Length: 148
Image (cartoon, rainbow, N blue to C red; front, side):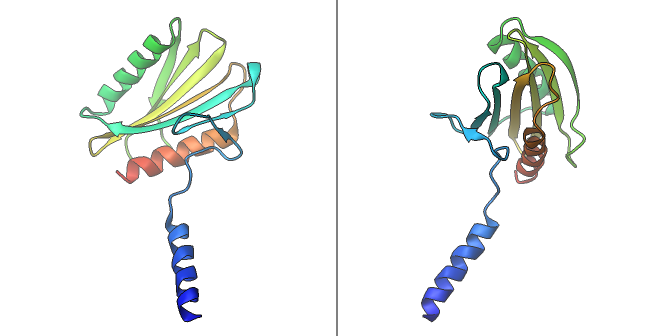
């Protein structure tokens, strides 16, 4: 009985230490993709993607790479602006793009210890975005950047 209790306690402690999911609360995983979730459908479809990959440049280099990637991947997209991502204690940024299909892409990014964290959030134009997605973006970018 003592061993069973000790195992149960160990499992509970390990699960409490596990990192929280980077997914927005209530969103659903996108089948066949890693680090990708969606909410809604049709014209109200929202998508959220998190990547964490090696990167040899600095924050300015990553900002340029984000812009190039978005404009290449989404022909006809327009850059709307960028700003520091003030929610994180370290250097991070966010870039906003208007996509040709009447959606907005907000991509938050950070570089730390040779790794780039990128979080892309796509939502319909005319909406301020799902609070769950914006909270997940803030929490994930700051946590993933700090853990590198």
